[in-house]
Image (cartoon, rainbow, N blue to C red; front, side, top):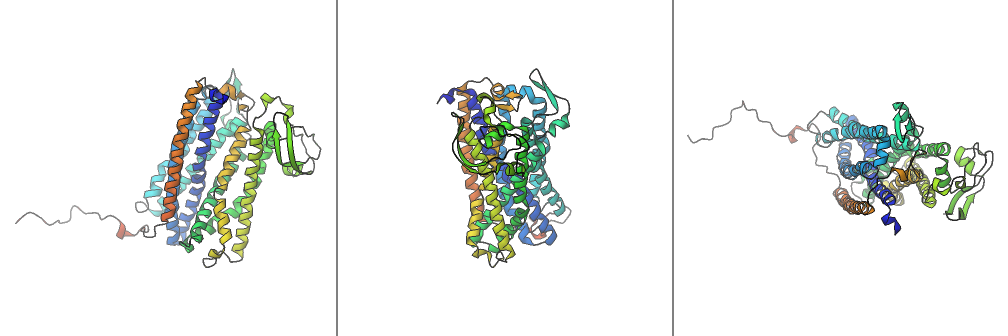
Length: 476
């Protein structure tokens, strides 16, 4: 239990815990916001009330996730000042301003139009309401852009130099457009959308299996399936591009992702490790299942490596990632889930083409519906696993190659950090079960089909013209 007296380990645990918990909520809101834009657009185009009721129903789950995300995300920013003050002093001129952009440019846009999206159906013109919904979606996904820009800069710092331990910005746009930024933003955008699609599809499948509003939720199921047909294979391709950038810019992380201890020279064939048991003490894998000559194909779509793949032994233990097994299996969990979701999508698409997803036949697809229900949480696992690979694999650096994590932590008493970590665990546990409770209530109640349609004047409050005659109630 020595870690309980180590400020660095406790601060890392606290940030990891708050980040992993917080990530659960914006992952759904950013993707679901796009779905809300789709269904409201279909409502405006077709005037089919089902699409209107879809927008009203799913927006309840949206705002629940939004609220929990705000509550759980706020403490993360404060940790840069409390637990990671030396880091903030060193890179605050750039890193702090990018986080400020996320708050003022993205969060405020989302929060500012959220009220119109939720409560403005009978109060504003339908076109204005649709613009508000679009602004909410843009704000939510703009947050993804700025957060991934900031984190990508930690992976591949650019746009300036470190002078006496402080980052001096020379080209602000070059810092924003650092080598990791574009592919990282794309990968995360697709991850949030894919996760949201399978959550919406899984909930829709649950209603269909329960024979509740089958025709209604068959519509939402086929909407998310139509989008998933494009998104799920694209995500695998962009994920491969993200792995390629690790290959070129972060060789220590790639070696940990593949539990590769020995260097593979350029021009060689190499086996790919499917499963293994990495042992950091002996610096090898105790056992391993490999696919012969597959590594170059997986990494570069070639039969031989064009560049060497450096093994972990090329670096001293203090200069390479720890917890190699965690990084190795997190990467495989993320990648495996991506292929599972593609498989479920392909089976669903085939059944759709066969006419098995019509309103009359969809109830007969029991195992397909069950598979979508099981897939609902898989996107979360993939996202969390990806962030573990991204951040744990970056160690021992906070800013890759520039600032070591041990030099970035504040000089705080370990007991104080342990106390705050314990408080976070308790509060976030309450938030988690509260979200499950209220989310399950929303799902159990289902959509409200008696909500007035926009423009239905009989449901609007009656305005009294003060100039009209009002009978005098005084005694004659």
